[in-house]
Length: 467
Image 1 (cartoon, rainbow, N blue to C red):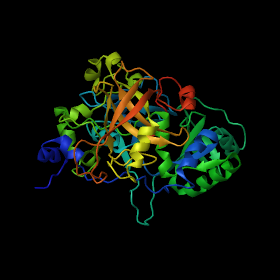
Image 2: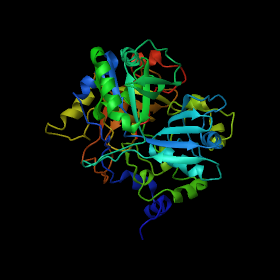
Image 3: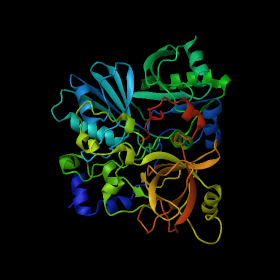
Image 4: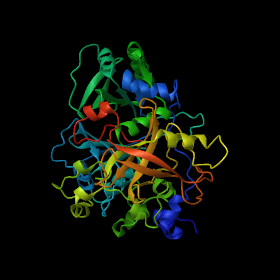
């Protein structure tokens, strides 16, 4: 009998890890936006040296929440404090399960006293939508991401969403505005006039330098985009394509691919029965050298992902008791791993040389599953962390990976990433291969110096969630 919901999928599979490790989900496709406008190397370098236009219109979910209980809904479901959450500001919103594992994250905007919009990936949108139906006086409107394959069909969204970022970003923004413009505080919102249209703005900092996220009605998409490109021409502004976009997360320290920790809690059985049998949570593909029989071993705490500073016990929320029982000082922490160039070259060369074949190291983004988990070992072979999001930075000329490691692993330590899976899974993104060890140096997150020196302490580096 065909499963009717996620819980039935899990019951029929018997082992959740095996189900997800053998997912037939194909490679991630960034929808609608071209892969490259020039080439991904040039586009990545531009956000360090001049300015770029990121098009975030199509790959994220928008969840609009309004009504008397909208604030109570986000307060009850997020680890974040809402005691100081003024209108026209935003927060990095992080919900956890009753067991304390992160479900996902994204940006939560407060548009009015009783109006919010969450922008991010499917797991958090699903979680908020489900909880909104549990006695809250709130109206929810959901605008799903654009399909990965449009096959020439017209695509529309509620809003377009752009970011102007880079060292010359503010020059572009002031030219669009026609005059000097005050730089509002980080994660504060305002307005801007572009080509006769009044658009909303959020002070952002994806590349470390001052920048803005902009959004407005989708009908003005082409008009606004062309105006930004024209204004940015004299400042070297480059439009960023789908290939380069994800490298901003690697450089600036945002891990977009945490496995939603919703598969085991008995309290979430009704939620799993509400989730569809063919949705994100049922098809999420686990990949990498770390293999455990327990799906709980893939759950990540807020501290492991760099969100410990967001956890505030000034309110009741789902998962509070589990987080209160955790000692933060012994939790794994987020770092960047700078992968050894010779070892990476060996993996790349295996595709064209006789001899061992290693799992393909794609460029610029290397994960071959929705949620990547590669073992990080010390010199004695002890597992001391997990490599979660690898890629290649043309600006740094390095292969880097965002990771979470034990608290006693110092910056500067040499560790080893085990690349490739220990057995043959049915994922369509892998071919038969041998495992290989890649040496790495434990480094700060964010890795990019500009981002490390410019971002406000305690904030997650400002990369809006990739869906």
